[in-house]
Image 1 (cartoon, rainbow, N blue to C red):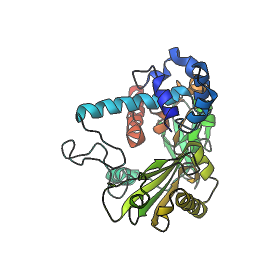
Image 2: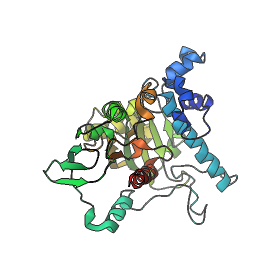
Image 3: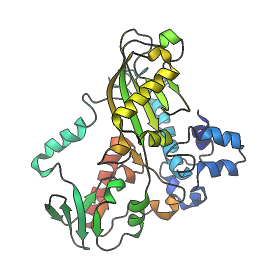
Image 4: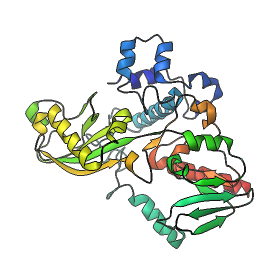
Length: 349
């Protein structure tokens, strides 16, 4: 199950998180399948690698995009090892020491969900943040721009920053000068998907069947992760995580059908789990009508086609959001990109 990600890491020549954009690596804007062929791997190895290829698929993601993630992961692991010598942490709570660094763990959760953080930030800004608005069009010159919303309201300014995913921005009519690379990115950037079923396990069924609590599979539900400490009795938290092609296939099902299918497949793989699972919530990012995907990706050829220039401002329109990140991931990448866009605008006066 580690064939794809292991080989991505093995052949990764990058030392810095933004080196994937260096034109000297342009020849690697190819698929993992093609890279493995160039390196002389057998068809059997390629078949195995498709189950753990980072990104959308072994054919659908540029190796340069994969190296971007791998390089950042290596840096994270290096930082973790220097912060806590000899301590091996796990990202999903199995052994997350809450007092590891000044009373904090390596991974920290926000009570009530991560959405609490941006909502708290918005509350500090008061009425200037307008919610429940959907952009329909952007018109601009080289001196100003106007965003018109679906309800007819319009907002004008000297500059505009768009941070919505390109899956949504491609539905916004944009008129104004420039934007060759940005138009290519908005129109064609693929998004990887993730679908997750969060659940409560009434009692640790793995103690009955004698198998490890968590597992990965080459089947239609991908990975099952037991989140809590596995030695205890009573209730435990767990989740089924589907990514890549597994998640894309699951997105053809609506929520009730998906939930039933996942539970049935889990019971088939681990009969001891039957009747012990309580559903908490299900999230399929591709079916979210305001997102349509979990995170940006780049297909083979896309780095050379537009990725190096897609963050450039188009007239007075600047771009932010996780799809424009160069360093961090997740909510941190939103902050990183927001700071960059703000600095760009300040620099223009």
